[in-house]
Image 1 (tube, rainbow, N blue to C red):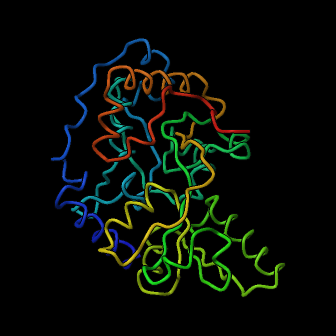
Image 2 (cartoon, rainbow, N blue to C red):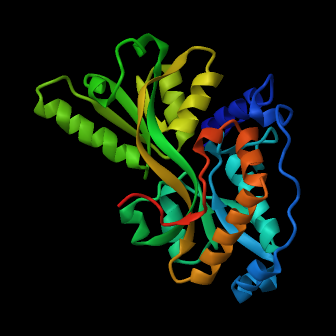
Length: 294
């Protein structure tokens, strides 16, 4: 954990210089939002009584979410967007750091009102929670610079070591590709599964792994922060939205979150937040519920 937090801290420090969106200078942040009484009225009584949305979030998936320079608070697209959603609904937000693979169970058990951590809205997951989609994304490959010329797709990973984050769709991608390598009589693809993205990036940067399979925004960010040591290669694949997780029984809360996100889209704040973090290409036209492909 000490290593993970240290590396996360380095990422945050690196993100605060030059024209990086994290310095807050390249673009103007979204303005404070006005409370929408109609959306507030949709909130469950426990949220109204506490005045707070209890949100599970990550801390190591820049530029979507990562530790700020104090190595304690989080920053990034997701925290900023969730704070704005809370303002529209007239409540404060509290973030709780949680592992990616604990988010669905945490929302189901009502440990959290909501969860957000670059989770793809997929049919399997929609059977467990409801998603309010806020961003469209894809998966991409990040490799060491020395491997950039020889890797353009998952098929090129045979004979290499690949890092993936526990609980993500990329774990399945890597494991399926490993089976393909074996079936084709090619060199073994070794898959290293880490509890968080920090471990994956550290494995690639130190040479323990040749590649990392992750969300395209994070892959692009890490390539840009590596000083040329790592490269994004090949074409992105599997385009799906990221969603905010809500308990399937809390449909009134789903409507409130969807309505707040749509209000941010309509008043231009959503676009400003995405522009600030240089991920405007992932903008959605409309706040959708369970909008991932079947």
